[in-house]
Image (cartoon, rainbow, N blue to C red; front, side, top):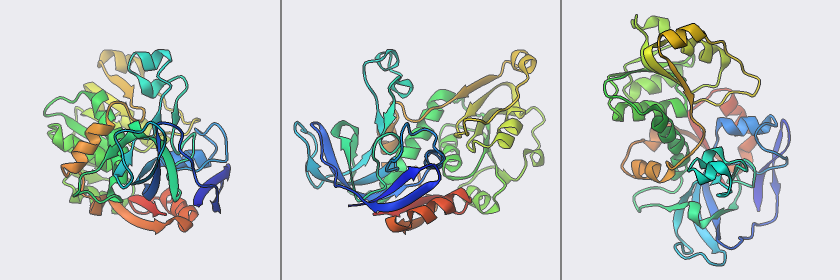
Length: 329
C-alpha cells in the first residue's frame, strides 16, 4: 500500500509499505480522508514521536475492511471515525480516569502507524460508527472537534462569559463554535491571517481583529484561549485575562517555547492558568455534536488533496494557507 512516511526530522515522502495486519481486537480500516494537524508538524520536527520513521495521521475516518479475532461490534463495510488515543489502562493516571496523562501514552499516527495511508489498523473499541447522513471524508473532523470538547470540559464555561480566542485556524474556529453553544456573551478572535479572520466573521464571531487592542474591553476577558502555540500570541494573551478569569493553553507550542507570567497579578486577580491535552472522554460526544451539525464541513475543510501530495500539503499547512487540509488516499 501507499503511505506517507516521516523518515527523519524534516523529511517526508510517500512510500510503498506492507499492508497492515490486525491483532486481536483490532480492525483494518481503508482510510477515506486524513486531516493535517499542528501535531504533524511537530512530528516532522522530531518532537512527540518517540522514534522515526512513522506513518503520521491521527485525524482520519474510513471503512472497515478487515477484522481481527474477537471483534464483536463492528463488521466489514461499517464506516467509522477513529479516536487515536492508546492508553495502557494500568498506570496511575489511567486508573484515576486521566488516560490522556497515561505514563505510556501512545496514539495512532503519533507513536504507531496512522491514517496518512491507504489502510491502517485501530482497536475496534476506538471506532465510532457513522450515521448515514455523514460523509465519511467529513468525519475526519471529529478528532480535532473532540480535542476542542476536552478544552471546554477544562474551562467549565459560565453563561455570559466574554471569550477571546487567539488563532482562527481550524482549532480556533472550533473553539468559537463551542463558545457560541456554551452561552458566551461575546467571542472575539485575533489572528494575523486576514483570510482566516474572514472565516471567523462568516461563523459569527463578535469581533475579528489583528490585535486585541482594537477591541474595547477595559476589564479584560473572562476566558482567553490560545489556539496558536505561538510564543508572541501566548504572551499577549496572558495579559488579556480579566480579574477572576481563566487562560487556557490549547494550542500546541514547540518544546522550547517560553512565556513570562506575573505571579502577583495571578494571585491578586485570582487568575486561573490551565491547559488541555488531546482527547479525554470527549470523542463520542464530539461525534454526537458533529452528527447534529455543530460544524459545517464545507467551511472547515478548505483543501482535499491526494495522498501523493502529502509533503506539499504539509508545506501549505505550515504556511498558514487554508483551514483544515485533508489528504485522500
